[in-house]
Length: 226
Image 1 (spheres, rainbow, N blue to C red):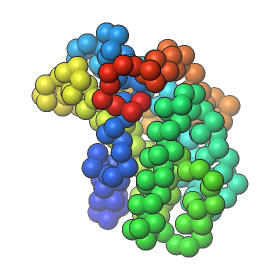
Image 2 (image 1 turned 90 degrees about the vertical axis):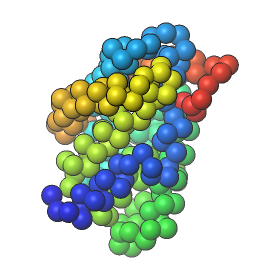
Image 3 (image 1 turned 60 degrees about the vertical axis):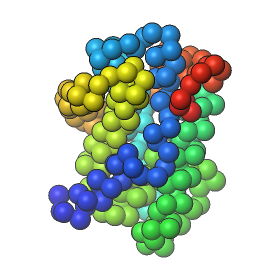
Image 4 (image 1 turned 180 degrees about the vertical axis):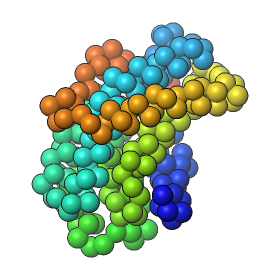
């Protein structure tokens, strides 16, 4: 991997990327509220379950397809997978999250003036831009290899979940880093799964997570927006 591509990957996988990822817990705060997550062991169990059941089987494979669609300049595929991803957000908060983060990243990449005009046009043609669509555009525009970009997305997701636990369980900083380090095998497996699933094998079916997300919409006291 060339140094320039690696640096671009680090930039767009960073928690300091100004898209608001830090403000979302994706249902984790509701799990904390009712005691499903209460220590390092239960935090790891939660993250691994969501990674294996949802992220590896739907969100990461959709990102993979969007990167290939942008690389091929396939407008129909970009629109199709963007619409599918939005339609699969099964609670109001999860839908608002991907639209807000996608909007913010779209504005950012437009301001940074990356990508050629035809590639940028594929992004701007979308009525609503979910986060994976904007991220796929950025990685293709910056020449980041698809496999590394996929790992970057998965690590960024896991890091955000761990940071929620560090702040809210609460876990100590060392425990958080130990947890993040322990997730390497699962993240590698998730990336491998995302690359090989056929279209009809994609699934984000996880009713417990959906119910927790809906519970969070009316949670009395909360720090996060999902």
